[in-house]
Length: 456
Image 1 (cartoon, rainbow, N blue to C red):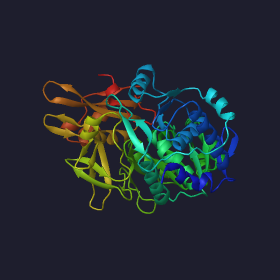
Image 2: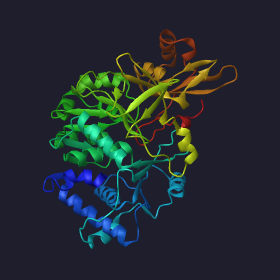
Image 3: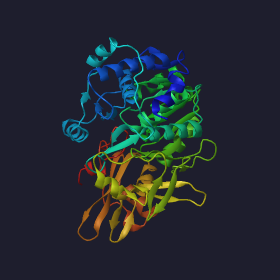
């Protein structure tokens, strides 16, 4: 099976049902199908063929959906590009992917598509065909293109539909960027797989969040920790109205501080479901829909996904694991050991099977021979009054090799933070400095880019 055959559960099976709300307009699944048929014909008329790459540099919009589905229908490989990237980062991706087309304004393609017949193109694609190349966020260096197959996306969507009970009766509010696997592989694919009604918004805006929720009355929402932190600023009575019909809040793409989960549960009356995924693997683990959603953990491996911990690192096998890095055979070989994908994420597993991530292997601080996991320090700091955000990283030290330093957003007393750390942590884990900053450098999905933190 390929993705279009999977999506036809909605595109053809629910043709007359309302599929999408976008900027005040509504589209049925049949209209979405026809729009993407025309776009596919426009791409083929230009001479693009299966295996060609198209880079798409667009904010959330219905035209991006048209292009993605057109690529899937023709076998053209979809290459989403982060709209926050600038010339140097874009040049790296285009130089690596060598696309036949770079779309940063869809107007011309839309005009061409309008004159095309709404006929489904014929493409010989199977589950092993490459559907997309998604470039890693590059939190520690140059990004690599993860080749994701039709089977990767289908296995991921089927798991989420089953495990999170997503059905056609859901109302899905999607504010995540579609250039990332969280918005694309989870959001778009769960929508098309379930046949639910989705309202797409260009981006999350704190000032408009309450209005969007109250107007649309969603049952399903995917977010990242920074979104949930911002939602905690909303008054409790408004929060309850926003969540009146909500069934499930999901968080991913970065660790959710346990205190945020607890505060959100008190404010909105819902326990956020935290899960764990990667560009290379889509979803790996999830807290249960039915059962304990344990703060600070990412739950259990998804159906069909095998996980193990080797020297503290999570390693994975399953139908969700990507086909390798585009044109990087050495990097692909290095990423696997005996068929297991080395995630680079450090974790522990409890006796009853819950996994807790402790940070990236590359984030590990080795100070005087002791291992320090920044997340442990960050979670303690986030519990302190006045601390809104924080990131802990190692800085070079002549005597100890590295020492931990904390960058902190908020109004705080550095002496008090040091006192709490000394009371709660081993002495070698206490940050040597608490650097006040206005904001932390983050990717569009909220991951802190620790390599961009200014040296204290």
